[in-house]
Length: 201
Image 1 (cartoon, rainbow, N blue to C red):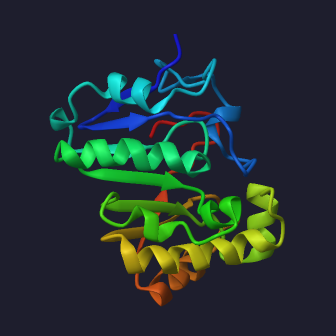
Image 2 (image 1 turned 180 degrees about the vertical axis):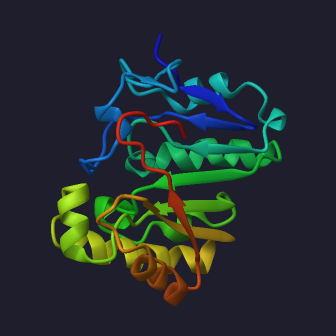
């Protein structure tokens, strides 16, 4: 049975779509059908907001609730907003893990719509320049994607309390140069562990 909500540690993760605007070389979805050997994240259909809320049950049990699964959550912006409003009413902390393509997807600045609903956002930068990003992540938006991510992160800094850029620690990524981009934006920076064969979040 496919998982809409799945727990890792003290956090609850929400898997709301399998659609994505990147085809990252390192992505776990191309490595295994079962995340952490137990969570089936390939959806038979995209859940409605009410189905997601039903799967959450009690958000007070978790440190945070995170929109993150086998796809890009901001493709379903309306659902993210609706579920986040419910979560905030329940006093939950909300985080989004995103590839940073949200504004490119919707062709407008969507970040103001997340104000007051999202406490933290983690944006996958995954490279230090446009050329390497396109080689690693193979985005639908081509040459516009990398600059679009940086612009998106800058907008997030205005409206969301905690913003971080992340990269996967692959050998061809210049971590210092990537961190310099985050420092220039005044946001946090984190390196995610890269596993050649296996991936455990």
